[in-house]
Length: 254
Image 1 (cartoon, helix red, strand yellow):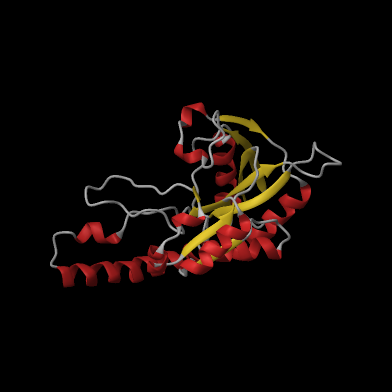
Image 2 (cartoon, helix red, strand yellow):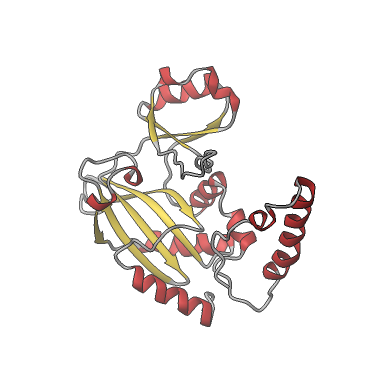
């Protein structure tokens, strides 16, 4: 079963009164959804429950640390004083959302890109909800690593202007080149997916200067893993599609 961002059940019942709409959507979710979630002999990419569990960024960072992957210094808080102290101690700090922006009333797509934050930006509005702040990584490029079953596809991504978040610029100007994933990182990625019960994940890393004694070996800093990530635009998308076909026909545990 290839389960990826299905349309909400709610749209089907838009003409019903509110209470009936909520009832019908919940029954569909727990009825049809319950059947789809419980196919014991199916190879999932990914099982819906596993994808939900793996979608929480704090859990992702915790798993990465357990597996020995470096992560940026991270603070999750809604306390302005704590946030300002973190920014003061770590200098260059970024903010990134946990889930992104909801769609506005007109239905357009909205996005909140990773952005630099200064201590003076952190006013009392921080108290409203949870925020994630991280020390900015001194990076030279980004890496997108797509793992499907036991197949690994990796691309170095560079932007002409060295953008903090490569997603927010001109996508046509991005440069891609194949990149070898260090053995220790690759082993950790397989363990990461196994730990969450996933067949597939799109991993993002910041690449930066490594050990001065071995400058050719870059430092790989874990940023996040999207268990429902995009991959169709990548240069090796055809090979990724074939890997999905293998997973769905032969199982990802082989």
